[in-house]
Amino acid sequence: MTEQTRVNKNTSKPSPREFFGALDGFRGALALLIAVYHTSWLSRINSTEFLNNGQVLVDLFFVFSGFLMFLLYSGKLNTSRQGFDFIKRRIARIYPLHFFMLMLFVLFQAMRVVSHKIGLSVVEPGEIMPFTPQSPETLASFLANLTLTQSLGFFDSLTYNPPAWTVSVEFYTYFVFLGMMAFFPPKTRLHFGIIAILIGTLYFRLSQLKPNMDFHYDYGFWRCLAGFYAGVLSAWMYRGVKPKIDTVKSRMPFHILEVFTLAVIYLFIVNFTGRLQFTFAPLAILFVITFAIGRGGISGFMSTKIMLYLGKISYSIYLVHVLISIGFTVLSERILPGVLGENWNSTGYGGDLVLLPYLGLVIFVSHFTYKYVERPGQKAILSYRGSNLVRSWIGKPPLPAP
View 1 (cartoon, rainbow, N blue to C red):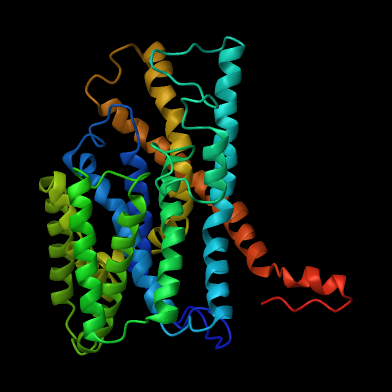
View 2 (cartoon, rainbow, N blue to C red):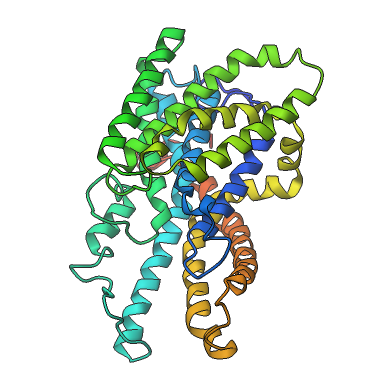
């Protein structure tokens, strides 16, 4: 374990923290699984029971976030300045790439309109053209995406970049977390027991409203809130077991625990469908604690350089893949049948092969969006000091960068 950051007692900069390499690696692997889940051409891989029922994979991201946020910011959100810096850091992390992809989707939808206008394509039966009253892509939904409110129940469908619904709901979950840490920071077993009861109550209520975990634009915020606080609960549990874990010298129990955890989660996803999916939280907590410990062979693999890099660019993978998936859908359903024949993918094996260049391109593009959009955008927002504009008006020197 290594320290990643240093303490700054005057701001909400994260505390020194352990490096959870396995969780970072799994973040990249899960992002790629979701990229496969969102493909629409015939493939033997994306038609497996595991991916067909894979909606709960997204919830692991919420649990990851709650786990890391609690460990990083526990005791560091006590003042208004710390709260402001916390939200600023969250905006810097999520907004630049979200905005960039939103603009690309606006351009993509505009190109659809133009292609129909000039006769390059025809309106398919049931197809709704963007920027019309019946379309999800309107000025109102665009403004909602700009303010990250597109998945707070104001619309009856996903809009523009579909995976960005998680960005919307998680952003506002940060405010709930900030309020809790500032005014009611949990410290005792009773506090965390209450959190556990509230998580269970929330999942139970959602199970009465929805047939399974595949919902987003309406009750997505509550789904995120439940998963995020499952992560907070797992962070508290991890802190409790960590001293005991450090006394265990043999790695064998951790090898067994990791295999057991993955096997149980796989069996759950394959067999527990419908409303049974709402019982996933305990397994998600087990998953996070197991691989936060990170002392088994699977954790070792997930901490290799290639997996850590996938984890680093996982946010880009998550937000860019749908646009690339649309291109490969056109390739698979309209271009390749004309080149290779109508039966080129009748068994699904051809679709499996198409997944290789698809995922390769997703990773390739994500490398550049991380390097040229995420990182520069993050640095620009973190270095921006709005108060300097006022100081310049009154003739005072600017404040130093944080």
